[in-house]
Image 1 (cartoon, chains in turn yellow, cyan):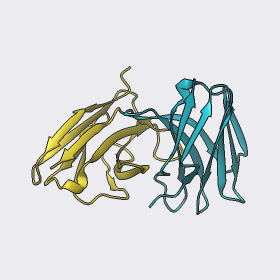
Image 2 (spheres, rainbow over the protein chains, first blue to last red; image 1 turned 90 degrees about the vertical axis):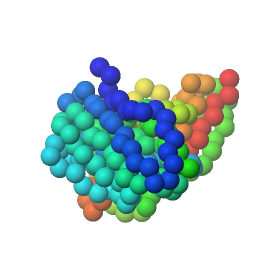
Image 3 (cartoon, chains in turn orange, blue; image 1 turned 120 degrees about the vertical axis):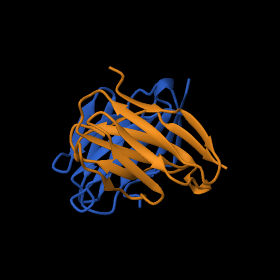
Image 4 (cartoon, chains in turn brown, blue; image 1 turned 135 degrees about the vertical axis):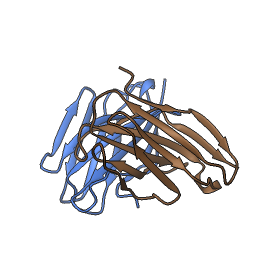
Length: 113
Length: 111
């Protein structure tokens, strides 16, 4: 099993460009998450999908949109990238929405110039 | 906003020594989890402890939870160079069910 996979691993964007980060899990998990990690800080939740067909805002949703494409896949879109969105983005999944261990992907390092 | 705060921010020890990291939080929680992150990698789950539990063990790891003090500790015994990583606590509670992570403790184990 691959676990949680993310593409791309690295990306450089210019201010105003758009892109989609892809995430897939093969563990048949119901819940999926997108986090960002900035230097010296813990992870902050951007959006989550408690179950297929639902998405909700997390702590820092501004500037992002998500799509739960199916049970396996959860994408994160930046419509108009800003330098403040320079960060490392992690996707995670878990069997249920709360009180469960989360499995993390390897991350996408995004730089916006 | 961060819920958990780890202490110390950085810890450097020799191989074979024990490492203790602490996590404090502000509000009542349902669960507290500890994760490890190696440099440049994703987080790996270590232990989940529920609010009605006081202590859990997993191999060389021991986690305690004191809900009256709103704090938890992670003890790594007989540390190895491979334990070098950042360690994060994360909590969830009834009002904020999504997990909130602290800023982490950076552990360096010298061979």
